Length: 396
Image (cartoon, rainbow, N blue to C red; front, top):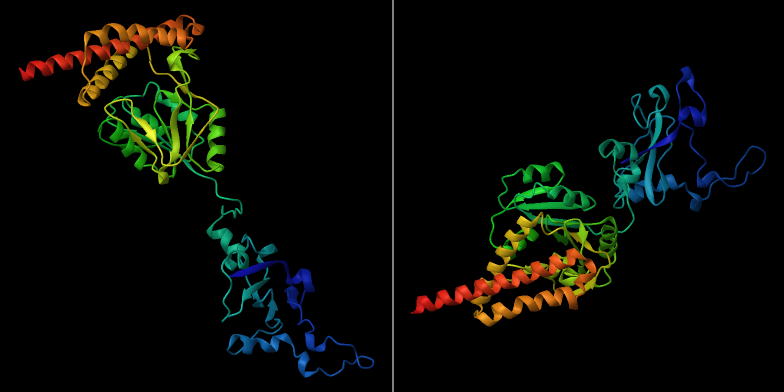
């Protein structure tokens, strides 16, 4: 590789014949740098004062290269053998002088082996041409984060979620069969879109996590958004995890536009950020999967924003679905329904959310949350009782 010097022959030595630049004559070597012996004379060089240039054949193991007239012989610079030569470059070249004049260059002598990384120093002109935007960064590598979504037909509310994680190194949207333009919306937002089959909450979540490009993964749903404060805390956490392999965060759920800071919806802490290399994965049954990691888990202070229901109709649909799946899961594990559970559990859950968890501090929204919570338990007990009675009829 070569390093083009900033000064041209004209700047250093003046102008030679016909205005052409020329290189400086050979500098005095170590051998003739001693004191003069009389007026205008130098003492004879000693054997131990041989010029360094004469050592080149011995060091390189080959004949010294022939040099053009006016070019200095090879020298030792920074433990590397280099020589000076002339090189004509075109006008406009990053290393050219004015009007394409000849400039001096430094090249490594043939037969020498440079240290690793010397190319970046020896020829910045060619490096600039090959990698015009290359910048050497000596700082520590920043931990990269992938954000992973599982979606289906979420075009009406996915955009705010994607915008809230634009800071991430990768945004992966795992789509399970959308037909409403969700995939196109995600691609336009700069996300990477992968189509995967629906295999249940746990298996589908794990498949999506496995597609992430980075070790640190943040798992989100389309109804969740990351605030600027939480994003800053996440970046700080992965940069210095302090031995942690996963991070929990609370979810601040909203009923309509009203944040719910009491009742059973708060603080609703979830492990959502973790390292794949430490077994970051989903576990669970038919519904309400949770995330696990094989290592230390710390809590973040900033909440994740959650908007679980678009409207009342959406709330009814989801509660019915989750209650039925939860009842099925309980039945498969040996649980059986009874009338007492159907009658007593729902009002107890209402009191727990509205009174014990101080849901009344959220006003009418707190009442609505407690009612939805109690209704879920009523439906789950009903579905479980139905499954129990059906099993009895099948055995009869």
